[in-house]
Image 1 (cartoon, rainbow, N blue to C red):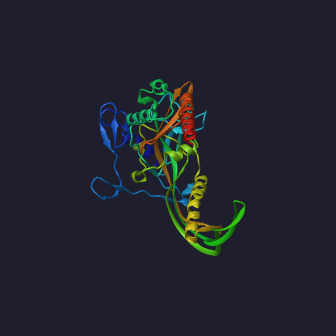
Image 2 (cartoon, rainbow, N blue to C red):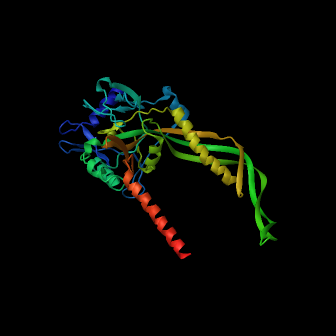
Image 3 (cartoon, rainbow, N blue to C red):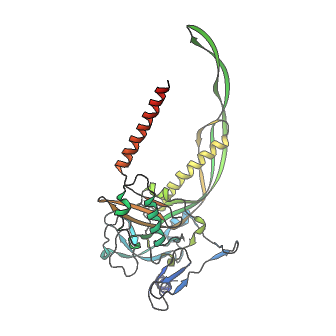
Length: 384
């Protein structure tokens, strides 16, 4: 199918047959809904098997890594068309929804220069994890998180009542690279086994030397050599530079079982960030994460009480890659003239955010602890 024909087909699937308005994906479902007349369109599922009533398993494929890097090998339909705008403040590149005349960056809240947006042909994702939590649910999760913060200023909830609507929440799909790999790792090292020796030592008691014994631990080392084999599946590496690594790690885990083959209709009504980390760099990051597991596997294979790994050389083979989009609600709130960002995993509901602390609550807690220690010490002295 020609690129122009494919893009026209996508637009047709997002248009309400009843009133002509744009259909939006409804989180937690497999259908689009018209916000004006209520018409619903089901998103077809490419179902491979039905495991039990009410559950489906969709077939998700990954591409061989080397072939994926070769742009000349891209299959027909591996690219799509999107209106892209880059934030001049933080550098994030996100898609624009149709008909938007003004918008702000979901990552830093800076105004976006819509006039400088570009219609680009971009690599199409292989998979998407659809939004499971809508904006109303996300708002309630944020409010519950806010109320549950320890040592937060008393005025925090009251002063954030500006956050009364869902319009401040921005739903965005973050780009990730998803890797599979099999590894073969020959290694050499040493296995340490503990043994104990009874030793005699002397202490002075009432001016006299007394002999005593104790068990002293020693280690015998034995040469070890072998090969470990590992299979890594769904190693997710973020392809965005717009969120900190600490935030990314706290948003985990992601429900991989709910991944769907990519369909533009899941993106309708949401933004999507274009990947900023190229596959080769992401693959290096994935290898570093795999290496930590491989090292642990080597230590387990060596056995004994303690291990030394003198060297190992990992061969990565059958490496596959998948371009994946994961859903996040992003927003921020003001308190005492300072901006605090927060993120919500739109699949699990996990809330990660920046927050203020109350100096006086922490101060009085410290004073209370010191006072309690002082009372305990005084009672102890009185009992002597």
